Structure formats: structure tokens, C-alpha cells
Length: 289
Image (tube, rainbow, N blue to C red):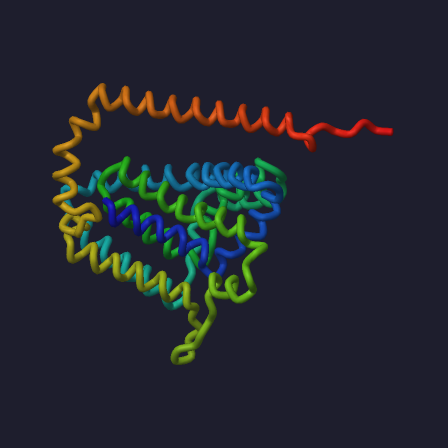
């Protein structure tokens, strides 16, 4: 599950940076001009729109996958083959627009471009979750992995992680976009190149190789069951042995006291600084003539 979540998050990042994924940025910037606080608020609303579209898809595919648990060997083989084929399609630049096969997706995209403000941001998120010809194979790979989970909650969580992978770099890029040099922007967008007459793109090739690698790993680890864990076994045992300490009432009391002490200290220091500022000679305004 850990590898699946990381793959889903990276898939969202690469979907955003895909050759046509950059088209999301101007529309998002147009709706989020203003302070950083407003940018963060619009980023959260954008993610709600993405999650509204993607998570139900993940839940549905997870439920479908749970019906195929009895045929696990076939499910693992089929998932690995589909991932490898989608990886090849992505690397070679063959697109896939999944939104064309979803009812109402076209109307949702039209509404997103005709609205303003928060509603526009929300609808852009809902439309962007499934739109994108270049990123179609990436989403297809994540949906395939979600179905292979054989668990509704895990599948929904994977699609939520995919959406988060789109939104986090999007908000980060929006915050620093005006300070990026043309060279940095060109690096993020990648570049095209030719191999044996085929027009390829660096981001698409990198993404395709990642999907192929996940497909091979999925097959060789029996559906990621025997895959490596990000948390070492020794660390897991240590966490389990000290879990009782972390849940003790004494620790809860100490945490509450510490937080309260820090909060009171911050309030007192702010009041002292305010009083000093008010008493300083330059703080009083000169009366107008």
C-alpha cells in the first residue's frame, strides 16, 4: 500500500507536468490572483473539486476489484500487463482522454471556463481530475492499480493521493511562478526530441518508464504484497513496543500543559511588544496642521 500511495502521488505530479498538463496553470492563476492566503484557499478548493471526481472513481473500482479477489493471480497478471502497456503508450506519446468516456465531463469543462472566483476554481479541479489527453495513460495506470487493491477504502485513498500530487506542486508553482526564470520554466515543462523519426517528450518518457517499472514490480512482488516497506521492520517493532507509552494519560496531560504554556507565552510576549511599540516616541502620530 505504501508503494501504491507514493506511485499515485508521483503520478499526479507527473500528470501536472505532462506536455498538456501545463495548460492547467494559466486558468488556475487567473482564478487565484492575490495574496498567498487566497492562493492556499483556492488550492484547497481546487483539491476538493479534484477529489470529488477522482475518489468516487477509486471507490467504484476498489469495489469491483474486491469481487475479483478470488481470482487474484489473474488480477495481478492483468494489472501488470495493463500497466506495462499504458507505460509504453505514455512513453511513445500516445494520449488517452478518459473524460470523453465519462458522462457530463464535457459540460463540466465548459462550465469551468465560464464561471469566476471560487466556483471556477472548484469546477476547474473537478474537470482537471480526469481531463488531459497527455495524462490519460497516467490516470489509467492509477485507476488500474486502484482496482487491483481489492479494497474500496484503499482504492479511494489512492485516487485522493493522485489528486494531492496534482495540487501540491500546482500551488507551489503558483506561489513562485513570477520569480522563476524562463530556463527553470522550460526545465519543468520538459522538451521534445526525436528517436527513429518518433517525436517524444522527456516528461512523457520518464512517466512511461515509471509506469512500466511499477507494472514489473507489481508482477514480481505478487501485487506489491512482498514489496519492500518504507518503514524498516526494526522501526515498526520499536513503534509497537512504545505505543502504550504514547497513549498514556500522563503523556496527554504533558502535551496539553506544554501547548498551553507555549500559547500563553506567545500571547504575553505579543502584548509586551505591543505596549513597547505604543510607548515608543515614533509610534504617536503627529497632529495634522
